[in-house]
Image 1 (tube, rainbow, N blue to C red):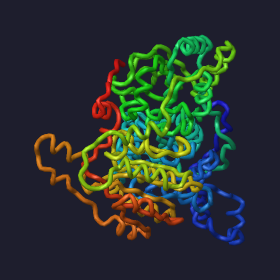
Image 2 (cartoon, rainbow, N blue to C red):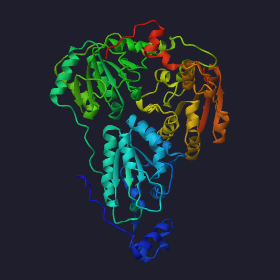
Image 3 (cartoon, one colour):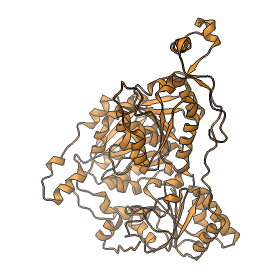
Image 4 (tube, one colour):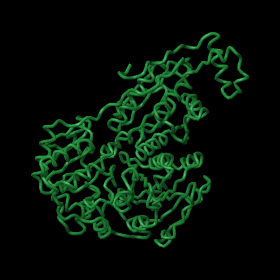
Length: 594
């Protein structure tokens, strides 16, 4: 039992007359109480599938994303019937995992999803890997596998798969073990934003339950660095003339944006983010936008000159550090709750183990205690200058719209309180710097580890979790077609979602590989069907955009599914407008030594 938890439930297995009474009460849950016998009323038996739903609700879960199956439908059905859970059904298991990710990242809560065991779990693995790479705090509930039921062939080593992925795994063999396993999974997800798998033994759904625990065990503290480390970090900050703070997904989980901005204002540091924390510092005058290989030219000039990088909640991997072609050997301080995550890719000069927000506050307190004063930052590019540096890069064109110009118009015409969700693909890189949102929880990059097709699921989760804001998915035609069946999930759940398809009528990334080897590219010319017509099949609406004026006249319905088919230039490569590729095209130096 977890220390601090309420007493665990007392559990009995149904057998004989008691089992028959339990089944009778289960099937009469919708009856008028007056129709139950005195014996039934006296012995109010609750079975495990009802208890699972009640336990999840007691921990704050109210929405579950699921591809239903025989092993999860009893407790989901009970939760929906009792008004404890809202079900958002999906047509594929990977989608319910991605939807939980979108829900979690847009709301700040742990996302709940469920699949059936064996094949259902296997179908979810790709999205689970992406969730692990994205550090997304979700919990996947699945029945045990291998199963003790000799009549099922749906077996796979779910624990082995989960551990191979790098996610957490928790198993409850009885209902009495479930509260502790559930609390451990939620705590782990909240602590460092990693997905967790909660495995339920088959017997749980039919166990008899006398009572439920009243509360959750205390969560795990993210901790804070020791005083000596804080002192050293402030020494390094005071000695630096051009410090930069780089924030990642961990800083978003910790709600550290305001604390890091306060630290930057006092110390004169510039601000930048990883892809997953994009827009964390939206609107702040110190904000450079992205750090790394996709950083715009105007931002790279400042990043290259920095002499100290303070990394908060980011792995500072090869992508965020720019593959050694961005920074010029600055000192590096890295803050993370997980000591094992520090210096995984780039060597660091100082590790700060603790919560990003609390650590930033401690650094600021120490700075002020020393009366180091409020420093002005060096000259920094404005948001307008950063964006224009992306537009200024000359790119080869063919026919169709330049995605950069599409994004310029979208930034102007979409509602300011928008939530932007992306898939992966050729059109993604420039989108991140050209379309803004109010905060990092309003901009969700659904790239995972480079897998296309996960963006629609992520957008479904964001739409379910954020009914207060209009949600827009920006994806390629290939990514949409990989998950097009989930347009029906939007219909079934009655969600509001606008999908902007950057349609080049081909698998554009594959075309360049074919050309590299002097091969004809016809096998990659796989144009999708009529996308506007496809939206109508799923009771939505749509429009075709072939000019920027079409886009400026974009009319969005107040509710439901809407699809915008934007015909873009198939020759334009977004990565050529960013990073060292852009500098080369503009004749600028691109040197780094990290």
